[in-house]
Length: 224
Image 1: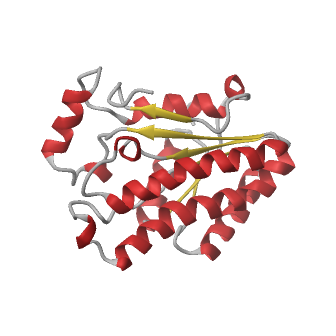
Image 2: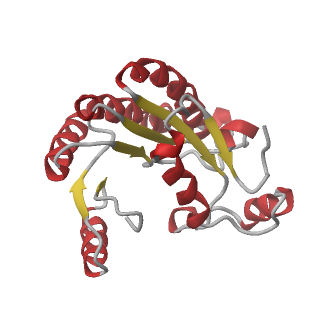
């Protein structure tokens, strides 16, 4: 939003979403909150329709929502219900949201989709099998979507952030944070500002010929 974008965002946490939108409005940013449940296909369709109507069209989509649910458990300890819940949100939700956004991007004649994966899918984090598998699927899905959407002048890329210090990662054990700190080329914590710059680049005209790519973003913890 500091780059001048008008933003519609969604979440299942309705009160928090409305509060964030109100806070951003006080700071002079154009941001609208709409309810969104990625486990519900009807909610995804409604969000895309209402969001495009609010913005008067669509030229960018960031698939950033995710759930973990499988942390700390070995493969033989996971339940089918947990596996399905993670896949429904992280994989199916990313597919359905991208598909729901395509007609509006096509109408705009150009656009960009950025899928937020995870570097845990690159190095194979243990005791997170469902999450790692889901983010691996997002990475591979990105490549296929890029080939499908390229004919409509729409780029599709994925970024794979490392463990980032946000409220949603507060549950992560201290030893996992330390593991990242010791393994990075930059021996410091990763913060949200480390991520937003790359997202803005991929949405910009400077990246119009970049598509189907995975960009690790973790201070050198994982290197291509």
